[in-house]
Length: 311
Image (cartoon, rainbow, N blue to C red; front, side, top):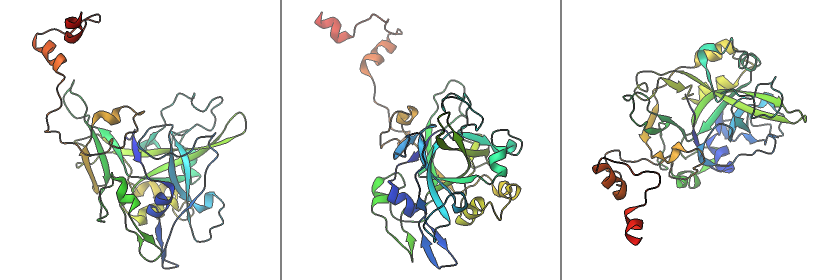
């Protein structure tokens, strides 16, 4: 599954990183960025994006009018977590968990089947996603990991902001910076009681393969080549059935452990996706350590040793 994402690049850098090679013209093209009227919500870069946040999403030009004749792809910011089209009332009150959808039941799903059949396929490009190790023993604290695409460039780590800011782009060579992690998804358009449209998306997940199952039994449907991205977006030439058959658990991923900062979705610290050393001793709370050694925890009304001395 996928419940937290790092997407911390600015709008111009995202367009460059999401560029693709147009064989008919022999050059690289940046997708147009078209803001969606998402009830006042807008994209704000962050290392810790959670469901209901707004992320940049790639869709086919066929879904939206654009003045750019070159670009066959469009970037449209959408809310993470698909809103059912039949839902009435506030968009946050439908009560369903729709940030992920299972590939096994896509076709038959009341919520996801129609967007799939209508060709509403999308790609969520990001620096990476977080997963908490669920294969440890019962009662053990779940360690978070940051998962990203394998990198071919030398611009610097994905998680460093400078890697994106210093990267270059031109029509002949394309993007020299870190590679985005591309995940397959579906999007839909919901209309509020006031008549305002909202664009929202879900990420497709599947059973993990042997290289990832040590961490979690589910994994997002990652598109690990531009050819796969192109086919997933091409709903005119590639049928829904054929597109779903393209998806498989990939092995072209890397990961590293991160701090517990990411556990709180309100924490947008830039260190959320930075690697940590699990072998390094954690700082000790000396007061708590002394209580534990005595075999007792303080009561709710207990004062600290320092306070007791002052009194």
